Image (tube, rainbow, N blue to C red; front, side, top):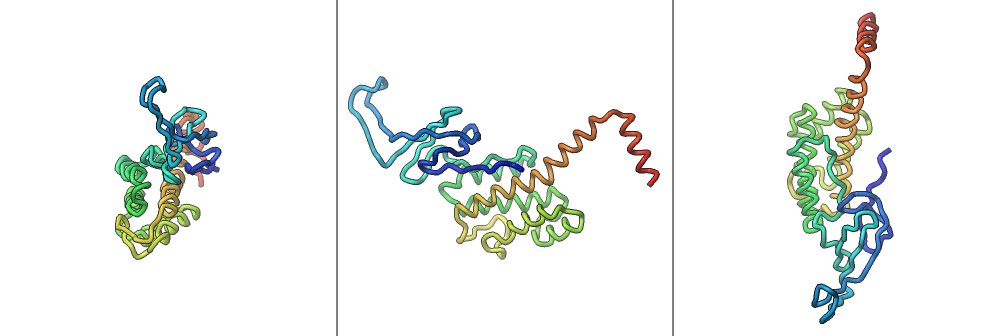
Length: 215
């Protein structure tokens, strides 16, 4: 089972770093500054700002109150690399605006799901009908449940790619996870199995074909 991606949170001892994406211990500091590069001169200190330092890559996150203001993509997990490029583009744009507009991020992620259904051979026009057709074609129950979760989360009457005024960051975070889960089950795992099967010796593959032909 894929380990949980722990989103950054103020003063959390460890989370998945927005830079290296590794779950790692974080060291927290109040933000201070100096007038000169060497630390001398006039000093600046503002307790409203904090900085966390990743123990692995030493990439900082900067916080204003409870909101992470740097980096902009707020730590959402990266897209599955087996997703088509246009879907990755939507996913990454959703990551970039999550902190400023969770509603916009959720709309982009629903659009990504719509495109993913099209990539899996469906029309992409009606996610409910797409799910029905995919189930009839042997869609694994866990993926069916994930797709239905996408359809139901928020307002199921809202079309993919449109704004639902009830969407919030928690909804967007669930949609990030669902996009990657569906991609893992429908794209990555079949690709991995195909690669393993294709690496078998030719005589073994021929024997399998002959065995199945007898059936």
